[in-house]
Amino acid sequence: MKRQLNALWRVYYAEGKYQDAVKCYEKLRMVSCELERSDIWYIANICVVIGEYNKSIDYYKEILNIDRTVSDKQSEIRDLFSLGDIYIKLGESKKAFEYYNDAFAVTKQTYPFILRNEPLLLEIENILKRGDAEKALEKCTALILKMTSNTFPEWIKSYSKTYRDEYPIAALAEEIEEYENGLINVTPNTKTFMGLADLCARKGELEKAIVQYNKAFECDPNNIVALLSMMEVMVWHKQYGEAINIYSNLGSKVESLEHKIVATWIVCTALALDGKLYEDYLVPLLDANVKQINTTYSNTDILLHFARLHEDKYPMDRLINALEIHDLFASYFFKSMDYPFNEVYSTYMKRGQIYLELGNFNMAMKDFIIAKQAIFQKHFI
Image (cartoon, rainbow, N blue to C red):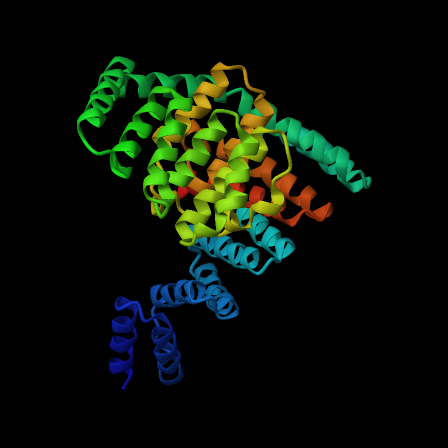
């Protein structure tokens, strides 16, 4: 019977019948104590997918105890972060903070490093202890801005050069001309308008791109990618209000999870670049399972627009704010900049703690997720 149950839950898992897999595995646990650690991990993850968060917590804690017993530090760090992620899903930011902090403590023991900004963090902690959370937030945000501003300009300049080497302006102009000539001889359709719009956006002709995306959407009102692309290019063209208004009027057409994530990212980016609060819109991006790879978007084209804004002397604090949102969406920013993971982690964890003190749970979770990604990108990716 044990052998049958052990084989059956794996079959259910392979077929995507996750609830059946969990039920079968639970029956297996009743008749066998000889269970693989990796199997418990799989079941814990399955429970997350089907929304059985309390069960997943029990399984992750079981794995955590096993990993601590065998002194598997890397797995222990993963377990602690996984528990933090579940508590974020449950909206229990303080509990998530505790597990993320424990993960960082184990990381420091396992991968020793020097924390150059520790004196400043201690100063911020003392301000927080005195009860002045607003001042602590201001100091911590300034520290993040200083930390990222030291690296961002050269990184984005280098990125922009690489992009232009790959997509020369002259070649893009030639392709655009071919598209425009082709439109004279054929009946325009949503595909041709989208192709032309993408090229215009890539070349930096944003007004022209907006017009073509709009034509593509008019040809096919069910082309949600055209709608979202038009909104996004409006944001890069600094038409923040217009982009948000489009979503307010047509947002009901955005039905798939992937498209809702993209729409959320666009709206939050518009507000951040416009210097406005965006935390009320953040929730879809705070899911640990959010991945840009599940959408039609690419870092290549998105980061080009950040480079253009930087060339236009856009305020650095707004750019960094927008890049943080992008990092939730793409997990790319700090990884590609190769910034010291320990300083990114400790500083964002501290600001997340301050946001918790102020009752701003969405912004706290945003910072915790960015902090976690810093360690994962250094040691697990």
